[in-house]
Length: 379
Image (cartoon, rainbow, N blue to C red; front, side, top):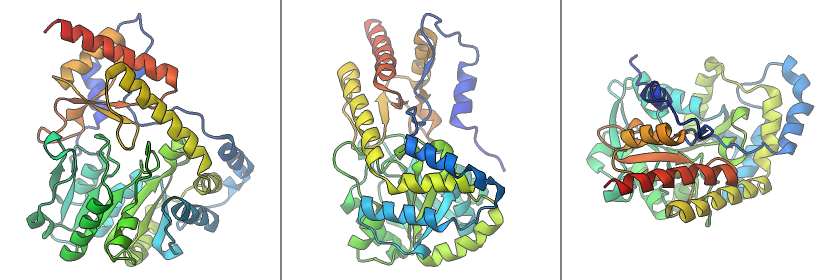
């Protein structure tokens, strides 16, 4: 299989021979990895259950973990799901990669549809599934929202949405999501929303696609699935705790497939994740940190805060040249938008991940402002 080079490797190649300004300490806004300390109650649960490393974990996940996830869905989204409508996963990266392979394996010429720019696992899954891809291009013309082409959807087997979106920070609201659910039922494709940033809203809570499914008259979630992760909401990416939830008929068969994959989460991680999923208070604290970071960004760069995520999709003249100059002059790394998109999407943007405490965030953004001023003075 011929996989595309990962964006961070592309960045390393781009900057390989660039000497950064040593007057500045190195900073990076490239990876969507929260830099806040994992809450102590999660660490305590992990330590308490460390002796369970002498036992094999079940692929289906411990009931304690399932209950934590189900309580999260109830508390956060007012969703009451059954055990059969949820499977714990080892984060969401693995499920986003192997679920399409499971779903599309027996289809002769599968078609996947997903946003562009995108989280690169979607593309990797398409390649591993031998699937043709049609992009939902996200740009200024459509306000970074996926545009429906029913001729394409009539042939689609799997449509992946990503709202709130990485990298553009756009967010779909209830009516838009309901339309997608109705289309999934009309054309009989599987609709999956990657909701890893759903808890990082800044003001009003954003809905789940499962909420939209109920609103669209599909309470059994036929053809509808979501994935979610603890990584962003709890500042605990190392726990590798996620889930896929929705259509029980699809998940029943997928669970059989997963017994062969070998990606069960170690028991100490499951116990720690269970208490994290069941608690919402600590997430409120992290959300306030991200909200403050966007306030700093508005003060320093004049950018408006999105509805959710911790990303700024910053418009620039030439994203490659801008990335190189920022590293060379100010020892700061960002990701060129073109590394995250195909067919020209992402060109003219860089992605900033505001994942630090206030002081570092301000320092990084002031370096960007300094470069902007320098470039502006040369025009």
